[in-house]
Structures are given as structure tokens and as C-alpha cells.
Length: 459
Image (cartoon, rainbow, N blue to C red):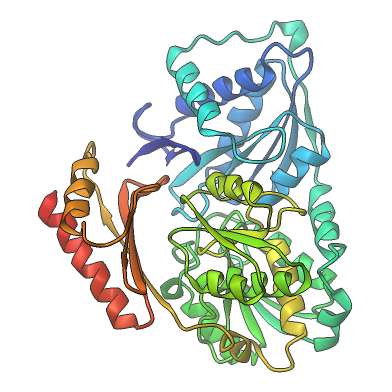
């Protein structure tokens, strides 16, 4: 069990000892530190919060709300929500910051505090460091009884988010409705069960079958939307003779599709397909993290744009998108970022854009997938013992492959002609991730196995 403090927020398993896990004491400590930094002596401070459907969500929510009001902060509580909805709400409320209570794709025993600035974007590494320092020092002053904050519960943002998607200029509701799509949704027992079917209905999709629709946080399968976890969805798409399947993670910022024959569209190709559509309507540049498929670069060049890689992590992708005025970007894990919608991964705008793209393609989703290159990414991980320093391990691997181009901006990325491998420690789990890509699946797997053996040898 772990407590992980990183650029992705404060994440840990519920229960256990303070400082080692995400206990009530840790939740209060970090909420108080973040709230104090956001308030920073202002006469009035407003923070938006929302949560996914996790078992611990209500407990964590109450601790955070009461801590913030204890600081004199006014809280807008969206209740059961999604990460992108909270990001949108921060801007719409003209709030000073936001907190999303979700551990994203992690299993049910995890929860987290994802921290947002007044732009509805993840806080910078510098602000994150301030939060950690203040939490450790405990130098926090709470409000007197006459200056306690207030709580406003606001359930209107489900509709506001859906309306924003439906009214987005590149989303064509009429074209989507005209295709008469039958869609199966795997909502993995979280807030996707509330938001995704409502969005599909608003887009004119009349036939929606929802799997794992009870919002109880008792995930029916591993909640990360990877092929090995989507067998139920795949089987149901075929059984229902559906046009496609849609999978989201518990906080609805990752998006994956299943084709009409039950095969995977590929989470890496969610961004590729959406970018292909957006770039056909708007010329410009793209960004994805360096663990993502090179197919995005291929599509970008086809449309006359320029592709830029970033370090892994949404905040890094967003920074690079702003630097290069990207019109679309995201991550190969099914994360779509549409900058003039908002600078955050958003499965809902991703669904709107993807279905518009598919509606304009005369054949099915399997045929659409065939338009893109067949690159294969092998995604692996090695668990780390507590306290392991990966720096000397990576340095030894870098030395071993010194004859190949190496990028050290984020861990270690090594180029092998047209293939590559990327090694990095996770922001959210005590592991090393090993991603490798090739035009051949066996080659990608063999590269990953070779590097995993190197890691073991040099550990």
C-alpha cells in the first residue's frame, strides 16, 4: 500500500497508517495545505470539488469539504461528477481552484486529490511543491467561527458539460443522429454511467446499452480501459449487433472504442482518429506524450501540421500544446485535449468528435481504423520495492545503448531505427513503465522484454 505525492496529485490506498496511505489525517493535511495556498490571504476564495463513484468517495468528500470550509473557503460541490466536468466548472464558476476526488484508473482501494488552478488545469510542479512543503510543516491557520466557509451543492454541471459538447462547432449532432448508431457503454461502476449515456442521448443516439451501470465503486473489472479488461464489452458489442462500444475510466478522462466485430480500435488510436478529424477542419499542430504512438505524427504531417512530443503527464502535454499552439493533443492512453474547449483530457468531447468523424465515414468503425497505420505498442510494467532509486538503473541502460538516439526529458526513451522504447517511473504507482512500439507486434514485445531484463540485471 502506498501514498504517492506527485505532479498528478496526492494518491494512495485508503486505510492503514498516516503518511504511508491515504488516511483521513492525510486527506485533511493536504486539503488544508492546498486550500491555504489558493486562499493566500484573499478576502473570499471559491473552490470547486467533485468526485467519481469510488467506495471511499463520500468519506473523502466530507473530509475535504469540512477542511476547506474550516479555512473560510466557499465550496461548490458538484457531487458525483467527472474530472473534465470539474475542470470546466472551475472556469465557469470563476473559482480560484478545484479538487477532483478520484484515483482515475487505479483499483477500488485507491483514491486521490487531483488539484486544479483557477484555469481549471492541473497545478504546476512549483505549486505542487509548495503544497507538499506546507502540508509537512503544518503551518496552517484556520478561520474563526464567524469566518467559516460555506457549501453550495450544484448538480447543474452534468447538463452544462453535455450542452458544451453538443454545441461545440466541430460536433455535428445531426450527422450523428442520422446514422442511427447502436452503442454499448462500459461505465465500470462509476460516473461514466451517469454522464456517457446522457451525452449519447443528447447527440441523438437512441440505442444505448450500459454495462456496469450501478455507481458503487465496486468495479466489475480492472478499471483501466485496456483490451484485456474489456472482454465483456467486446462480447456485448457482438451480441447486441452494435455499431461500436465505448469504454471510459472511473473519472471519464480516458476513452477507448471497440469495433463492431468485437475487436479493439486501440486506445492509442482514439487520439489519432480524433486528431485526423480535427485537423481536417482546422490546420495546426499536435502534441502527445512521448509514450504515445507515432501514428499521431503521421496524421499531423499528412494534414500539413507539425508534431511535438512532451513528457508524460497531462500538465506537461498542456504546457507543450500552449507553446506550439496545438489545435489538438493528448495522450496515447485515450486522453483527448481540445484546447478551445478546455485544457484537460475529456472523454465526453472525445466522444462527440469521434462520433462526428465516424458519421462522416460511410462504413463502420472497423473500416475507419483501417485508415491508420498498424503500429503496435507493448505496454509493460515492473513493480518497484519501496525506496528503490531508479537513476543508476537508467544510467546503466543509457550507457548500454549509447550508440542509439536517447531522450532523457522524461525517464529514458531510446530510438531503434523506426522502433522505440520508453522507460519511466509512474506518477501514480510505485512502478517502472516500459512502452515500446514497432510496426510488428512481436518486435515491440521483444524490445520490451529485452529492456525489462536490463532493468532486472541492473537493479
